[in-house]
Amino acid sequence: MTNRLLTTALLALALTIPAQAREITHAMGVTDVPDAPVRIAILTNEGTEALLHLGVVPVGAAQSWEGDPFYPHLADKLVDTVSLGTETAINLEVLASLEPDLIIGTMVRQENIYEQLSAIAPTVMSTTIGSAWLDNYQFYGDVVGRGDEARANVAALQARGAELGAAIGDAINEKISLVRFAPGRTRIYSDHSFPGVVLDLVGFQRPALQRSAETFVQIGKERIPEMGGDRIFYFAPDDDNAESLANLEEWLNDPLFLQLEASKAGKVARVGELAWNLGGGIYSAYMMLDDLAEIYGVTLPPQAD
Image (cartoon, rainbow, N blue to C red; front, side, top):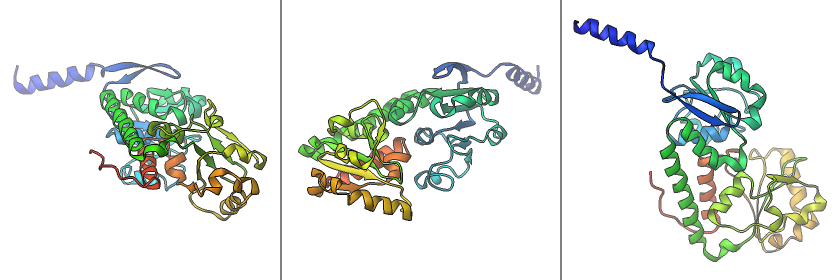
């Protein structure tokens, strides 16, 4: 057989052999996933951070809660990625037009469109987001065939958190209270939240009321005493719109808030909502660690590449 005929025969054989796939067990069942997916669509913000951190650029991604259409700290990595609408309103027509070979979503956001997603491409889902973000990072790594790298990256983040905790010293024993102020939606966040998990990585203490299986509790002003802690970190809409600023002014100057021990000690600090709440993924976690290092006045060695 000539070289040309051999090449033609091999190509024809390759076209008849189905692509290798693995069975992935996920929140919605078991799905055959390509061994080496190339065109991946991701339907959560935390998932976008995870894939990019693992060196995978998705063809389509849920747009960010801030930014146009993606968070500023991710935008330069997503110049060729198509926005698919928000996590709660995925544009299925745009998604299908991208011809993905794998879709990754979360049951808490997209359970009701799972069958439609699966008709477009193999689809796997995490159970939820928020406090599960670190477990989800490992899950996404396994799904895209980079499980070992994901495990190493999780270990590196945990080590960085512990390193920061050691550098902070005795102040690590402060009980940290987490609060979000938004018009009509003031919330106290527990350890079962994205920022709560990061604080735990560092080793901070939390008020007893903020050790809870609930991500947050929404409160009125009469429950301000429940915000009590040695130090309060709070976040609010980063755009500082007029309504939000007026709301902040009202809450922060409420007599009950001013009577909190953290208020009287001058240990109330605003932090960025993007990093501490909205981003929800590994880049945001590292930004939180940087914020905490600055707040506590410690310097850590540069991160390894």
